[in-house]
Length: 319
Ligand SMILES: Cc1cc2nc3c(=O)[nH]c(=O)nc-3n(C[C@H](O)[C@H](O)[C@H](O)COP(=O)(O)OP(=O)(O)OC[C@H]3O[C@@H](n4cnc5c(N)ncnc54)[C@H](O)[C@@H]3O)c2cc1C
Image (cartoon, rainbow, N blue to C red; front, top):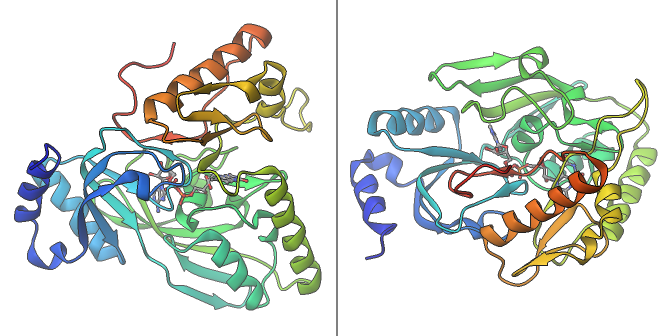
């Protein structure tokens, strides 16, 4: 029996029997993240409703076990050693439309949500077509592109707070900022969200969606595992100006030629790290550090990481 299996067996035995049906033991995190990196999680819990989330959360605090929340795993780096506790994999996926609003489970695939909203005559989200991951991940990270972000659309969300209470929160509680919200790292679980869209020109929206998808196919890795942009873009230098692309600075320092072990910078986009050949978490961290240090040395600018790390990825904080 491996080291990770021993505690897994003990955790399984202490779970109430009906919750045991909702867990998968010793799941490689590489299978749950788009980068394809990460050792086994002791247990992955499939959260299909608020009650599941509440009971798993209560179990973790009673048994003093670590837990982490996972959506589509498209903005995550997981540790080579895996995760010794419970991964709460958000799988709430209902979808309903009422007037110009829609309500969906946080575990619903974000691009599927965009497709379904168009099928129901609702427009507005097509700019974000092709962003991988779930609705919950998009809200918690305030995902976006082309100068727009998901936070603009939120009316309210059903959230399981870290203290165990279920609350309906509005946009002001999320504090949406560029790729940032107050929910990040808080331990709060987004279970469901209501968004405001419009009954707009569907032909135009479909054409916009098609254009954005093609743009992604041209610029993003489709065949290689990645987690999207590694670093956030920089604040504009003028009040209404555009953000400065981190990729432009990285290109200037020759990042496209950089690699460490099986991790490499994507040749078409200097701000994307790909798992080219069995990369480890440590390869990726070393490569990202090299990229960050090169930009700091040349431009005096400290890049902020956008990709979230599960516990155990690094032994020391970056200097
Ligand atoms: C090829 C590619 C292209 C990308 N393009 C873009 C882009 O254009 N714009 C952009 O913003 N991002 C982009 N991304 C990054 C990523 O797709 C987004 O950040 C996405 O919204 C993450 O959602 P997820 O469900 O995969 O979240 P995960 O990666 O699973 O989680 C990300 C973080 O959110 C937390 N989280 C997830 N779900 C919940 C929940 N329900 N409740 C509480 N916390 C939660 C996790 O704990 C973690 O800290 C891209 C990624 C790839 C691989």
